Image (cartoon, rainbow, N blue to C red; front, top):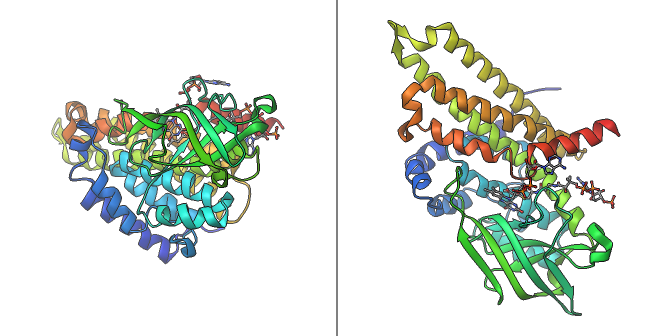
Length: 379
Ligand code: CAA
Ligand code: FAD
């Protein structure tokens, strides 16, 4: 057992740290305020190889391990969770899903530009009536011989308007319930496929979250992922890794807020000394540091298990459950340590507090993570 990062992992972390501080930080407050998607920054992240980190180099990926991916997610999320969610969805939902379960033709056509960061992807499972209860898919994919006819609505889709490639889950054989669900690759611009307006959100306001409408959308048969009826398993297996990415995002949000609070506590004076010298504040910082370290260990353990080819279902859920709670608790304390300054935008911590909340909701709410964990411990 060892806890040291390799030289390569340290280098990639440093590259992400530099990028976050130099390229993401300058405009992050404005993007949040105006709900502006970080287009330029996403393009640069593609050039840096952050959008297809774990994909095999033969499909234009970086061939890196999951631990490196969590390090990048942490550093980016310290500054801009709206940018890091693009990295998370593209890497661990879209690229992973295509590389693991796609055909050679699908990988050539769709994975390569996604892994190179030339395009971005979206993962479309949630619906107005099917969020946590994901087997209740209402979107239908009727088998018409050499194509499927897609009808329905997807909700809350990250990269909804900016993606080129959409992985869409839909019901083909209703009578078979979850065993009748399929996953499809749908291209932007396919007739009958429209994107709804951008959601006006509490946090990750730069991220483009949209509903998607499918009205008699023809999807070629070769765009189905896996065997007929594999779609629900596809979604679940893909989300297992996605949850590690979101856990790393939550960790980064917490760590970013903590670093700001620590620096501020050393600088800000009250009653003749830095507020860090008041034990109430020093103990808050001690708690924050401890919680963050525990979250980091869970995140790295889950990533390491995935890299070893071992099961990581439960550990990924534990990491997400714990790290997202840490993100909420630490960001609230970071605002408190900043006093009134924490309540205004210039000091960044109020945005991190708002951004933290989504990590307890998407890719399975905290209650759903507890369901996954409890089923395992009770089995
Ligand atoms: N791996 C493989 N198969 C799995 C699985 C896993 N991790 N989890 C479940 N399954 C299989 C089960 O084995 C079962 O198949 P069989 O009958 O063949 O055995 C089938 O799926 C149904 O499983 P359950 O009976 O456990 O289904 P359930 O209705 O009780 O629900 C659930 C399971 C875990 C709650 C699931 O519905 C779930 O994960 N819900 C949350 C959805 C979610 O995370 N959405 C995220 C959307 S993407 C997103 O949010 C992206 C973003 O923000 C950026
Ligand atoms: P519901 O499922 O209706 O849950 C409501 C409440 O009930 C929650 O507290 C939940 O935990 C609780 N609950 C439900 N069932 C149970 C149970 N069995 N036991 C205990 N409690 C339960 N989805 C995608 O497919 N792709 C995306 O890219 C994507 N991006 C998103 C981006 C944002 C900003 C947001 C807000 C959501 C995104 N989602 C995405 C959707 C997200 O995954 C869902 O919102 C989430 O899974 C919860 O579903 P729901 O909103 O329908 O809530």
